Image 1 (cartoon, chains in turn cyan, green):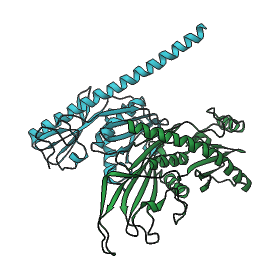
Image 2: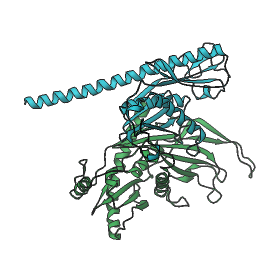
Image 3: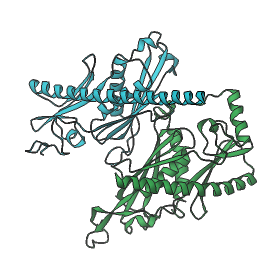
Image 4: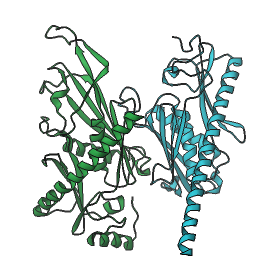
Length: 252
Length: 287
């Protein structure tokens, strides 16, 4: 099957090094301490963070650092065909573990000993790259919850089809069976924290594909910083309005 | 789990007794309802409903299947509800299963009528393609994203909105096949049939706290309830289903009184919901 047309366009009309449209929202789940929705094209995930709070299962408590837990779940309607999988299948368990390890690496757990942080990610729509979208959503939700972190983590995937490195694979490209490299980076520290690949790839090609994925991660990081900046400005404006309102009531 | 001090509990109960609840509402006032339709592009129909901080999504997926031998002239509808751990950390793993099962069965009681499918809000015979051989199976999935009480009413409203947003592809049946064979069907990807959702009931839950009952209880108010009655009522004012939850018994006369209140409140809810759904559909068409 042809994934890149002779004109150099992909199935959904993107260029090989183009990402899907990103969209993020913060604070969707009112009850959670932090929450975020992250969309990469048609992939849409929601993340909620509860904590730091008291450890629920005392035997898991650690006296020198916080306990980080994560659960990944997919909605029944998230995939094209309706899913009837029970909760906690092997794929979800594996992704939960990946997200937990990635987030644990950037949270300053030693600042919150004897406490617990829960990260729940729920996939609403799956169209390839759910792993990356979940990590990006979790980062935003952790920021929203005000949990101290070394740096944000951003993630993006890249693949190699029709001898072209492709950024941010969608479901059709992902299921083509080619290599799929998922990378997670700490953008400010410029370090890779997550690297996964399936299928085989020559070493020099792998370098290109990984570099492309890292570029993608950096683009996501820029977007996440924009979202944060916008939010902070919004908070400032609200604060300013309140101050002005109080001044006016005070004057009159 | 809701942790409330004794003072807070008294405050909630006292407010309800004086017809001024802790968020400023009266006993029979709903929180503002927001409806968004077409939120899941992969589904045939979907809607997201928010009531205060309660946030639910419902999606409808249609698949071709075989009608059951007992009712060859009717399609099948199934309702499943899933409680996401994002709503409540205790829903993690299998923790949400009990509530999910309770909500799914309550919705099935309230919306699908009896076992025969008679009295269902959805006209099941409109789902048949070839009698006894091919019919549409509707899978209705609800997902609780954020929970702040009154999940059943929110899910009922979301399902109603999702059904009104649902387009079922029209099906062309190929030339007459032998009577024992499965006929070949051709699903159109351009023509869609809309549902008639005017008969779909809305669910109103009356939560009894102290001597009084309230609509649209928040999580804090629900923690103080003695019992709750969910009544599903359609446009004509007919009761389509009813469920009582909570351990404390109710006087039969109280139940009758509750029904008349529910009848009155549900009419307001239905009007509000219909206008929200129409506005949401118009919004979706524009974008």
